[in-house]
Length: 418
Image (cartoon, rainbow, N blue to C red; front, side):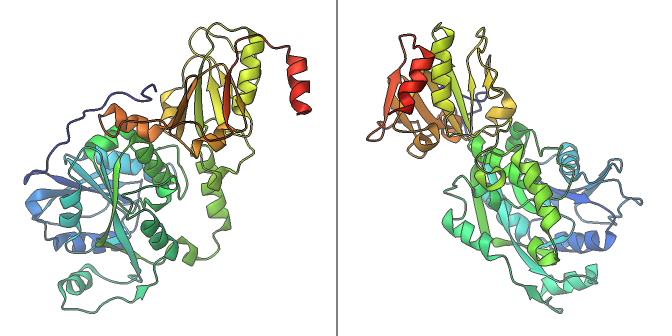
């Protein structure tokens, strides 16, 4: 199975007592929220000498004020060109100097031990950690009130019920340590931390997201595909001002806009259905045609694409005989390999008794003329982790190496009468 991305270092960096943390805070207009967040950072149990705070302003009319702090602070700004949360996070990360990037949204307040707990587990180049986002009504709270609350001397805010779907998801994935294909939905941008190395390998957040929502799910999906080590920390708490999105009123337009944006990038039936064609497929198929003629290629590609969210690449120097937009010459590009879930390497074959979609459920599987594994497994194998060991094809499934040129009309007719 070909490695879909560049070879990454196989050696895992060990944690260091001097490992520096960069807290990256995207900001827009709400100085009151920033004051509360900074108050929470004032009380961190991690020494102030171990972390910095970078405020990334998304074009506010007035620059954010950070005041005098024991920790180093930096403010970077971008022009107001609409909602650019993803770009603001990347801007903050590019100005940061830490080995660990801790993204916290401006409408959040970290518990006193948040940075210390995140740092304790974010120790390798492949780590992604999600904090435990709790909810409370913090509107009207001052920085001093937050310090009193977190210090144990003041009034406590009224908690708001946290989303059950998130808790169910973390239980399903063993706190993200056994991520499944929908684990990306559990990556919350308001409280996500990564190694700088992983962030840079991913290319940061996708800056083409220009409306609320989706950029964190896309980031989490790409991290999963890349083979990241993910973990949710139940005891690393960040308090969010206000409820989760479903508790904020009518969300139909917001969710639909997010879903359409994700559907263009993320190969999951949850966001794109099962019967439409998108430029990023769930399954990448690379066919070694072996110089076969057009009829062989057409019959094989038709069989491989049937009933599956897949695209086919025919290799360098092979011109596609088909007009189907899912069939390409050359090799899949990095944008596709960063998001596609499954990799198929095969000769010109016909599938009998199955589709590629069904075969992926049994992957990794292999036969003399076809192999399937997940992109995540291929990436991890390229780092020397967890070698892919294909299983035999499921019972009732046959892969036919198409050697002789079929008469296409008879091929279609004979199949229709079976």
